[in-house]
Image (tube, rainbow, N blue to C red; front, side, top):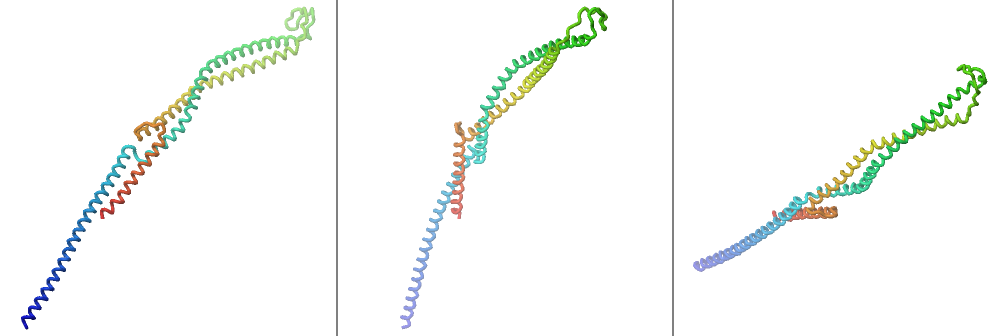
Length: 273
């Protein structure tokens, strides 16, 4: 009996040990599976990390290459504004060119007009001298006629004491007035001719400055247009007839590339965890 009891105890102990062994075996298998799954998850995470890192680096590289080739979006926007401003100035080029042509034409016609004005002054001076001479002669006769009432034929003149042969006729007041009016008009004509001559010479003196200023304005506007077109060419890499739409499209491309970098970074950060 004691032996049988001892055997049952051993049997029960053996059964318990076997159950514990089976439990540990199951736990070990579970641990092995867990480790395997963890390794697989780690490998998958590594793959995702490398993929996210590759996408991030690719997006960043594309964006940096675009900026290195074309410049920043702000710089391109400034180029657009420069082109639009230069286009407005270019609209004035035909007007300034026509103004220069008129100035050059006026410069030639002024030479003839100044010569004619000089001759007009000379003619007015001659006419005034002639009118004044006639007026002085009539005025002298008028002074002599003032003694008419003191003269008598056959008697001595009270001034020169010579015998008066004939009493001079009374002067015509209308002719004297006409002579005086001719002098007045001749003076007015001379003043008008001199003013015209002075005005033409003043215009001729100021014309070279106006012409030079217009030429400078023309060159300045042409230079700005050329500089703006040159910047657009440098940014785009090729010459285009309408650079503004192409530059705006390039800005959109740069912004899209920058957005791709941001999105790639957003996807990359969780992969690090």
